[in-house]
Length: 118
Length: 115
Image 1 (cartoon, rainbow over the protein chains, first blue to last red):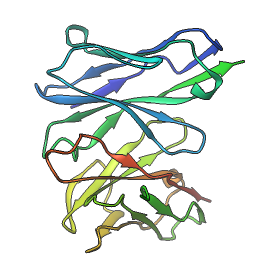
Image 2: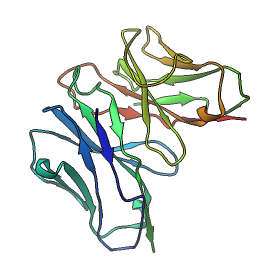
Image 3: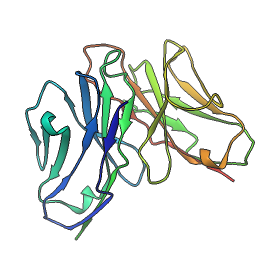
């Protein structure tokens, strides 16, 4: 069975600090996809990144960066120079490569509540 | 281009009642998935519809059922409501096209409260 663990439940930082959100996953599949979603107070899940199991290259997008390490089954997310607008709940998710991948069910972690104080 | 829309936004029901939630997928998307998100938890997969049939199902009882219409919109029905069914219900859509990016687009959700 697939499982995603986000051990951190709440993180509070002061604006401009860097913050890393941890994600550890379990799966028996050799092909799988990892995701990060952001959920602001409005409730809608906002897609941030997708990574497939064959691509261990780290990725940077503006202030966001992701570190994928298959050896430790981790897919961590770092926000550099955090801003108040980054305050939200962040979910890591895993999907198997059934069907077309786009349509596989997502297994989510419990989420990390990030509060960025001015 | 409208994204995923869901209705209603909020709903209050009594134990034992039945409820229907609605979802319109993003334009061009033909697959709809439903998730239940209890307070303080991550979303949990309920089921997925494609070509008007349930294709995948999570670990939810038969009280949870759904339907997909020819225009790809979908309904989630929950019978014999329990207090534990109180949650945010999220709808996600995605294209069946295998060349598309592997992303599900989520709607704003329906907040269901069972009293």
